Image (cartoon, chains in turn orange, cyan):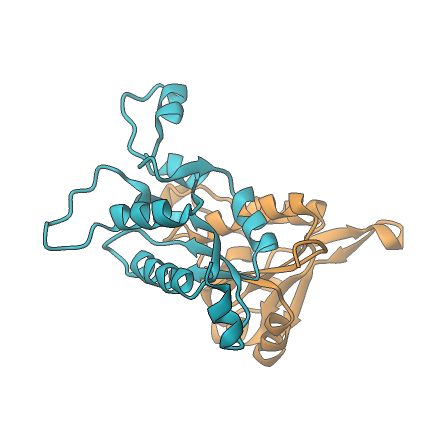
Length: 136
Length: 143
């Protein structure tokens, strides 16, 4: 149980600003990369706004931390599941999200998309496969 | 250890890490986690670690003065930790943001006061991830 690699899934359900959950969840994700576990992220409900493109926070005085998501690929975190229904309910498409990518070392470092669009039902199955699910 | 009871009931004993993400009194998360920890320990389960994150770090203040007819959440945790030698960890990054400091950290940051109860220790987020790796279940208490 305590050896071997575990599957960690971080589920993001809240908008990036307004509360600190998104920022502090990202901080856990970045630390988890150092533990050589299998790490994936989920963006659902208002969490899909966390990876919206063109975020501007100057007027609100909040720190715009969205560029940090672009570094996830460099940390070998390249499974970012986005729930299809959550996007649709908010009138969003994949074009409204940042183009988050990683370089595939098994494919001559080809640049590939990290975002995987999944349905609510598929997400339930993915969660069922995890060892640790941390949501906020 | 209550192993015999666990075996007799045909239930396996588990190792838990608890993640508490909400502050005291404002939210019931810490109370629920405390009740869970107490019940699990009574049944012979192990609490590998209790990790305080987000506003949950405020559960570690030694300066709260709740009304006398109310529960003292920090002291409840401290008493349970003493009885069962619980490892209660406060995230340092979340704590620093919110003005939660132990004496060492206060000295390092040039602050004139500290407020972390001695039953808790300050450490990094790696302790949460390690708790997830080492435990059978990681349970989140919060929204």
